[in-house]
Length: 85
Image (cartoon, rainbow, N blue to C red; front, top):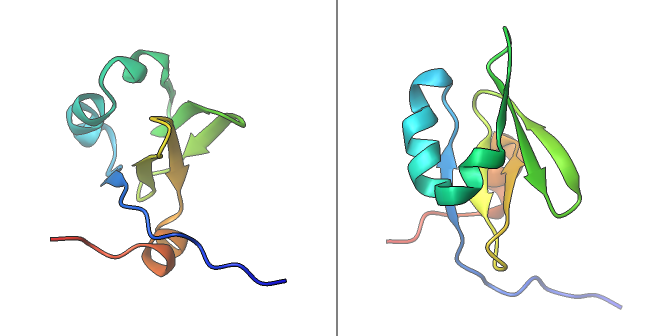
């Protein structure tokens, strides 16, 4: 059997390092309080439905259809999503 992914619009922001934390905080709202910054690496630890996942500089933070947040590598993001006007 084959299946096609349903078209779903998601919110996302790209993590560009410590300077982008205010934008990430605004995007995630209260959920940002659960995010940890890994010292000396600028990596974020984001709690997801599948457990904690590390986000590196350049990764996108996506808000899923259930209000959950998760990181996505930029190459996968660009293959999977396109900007909606």
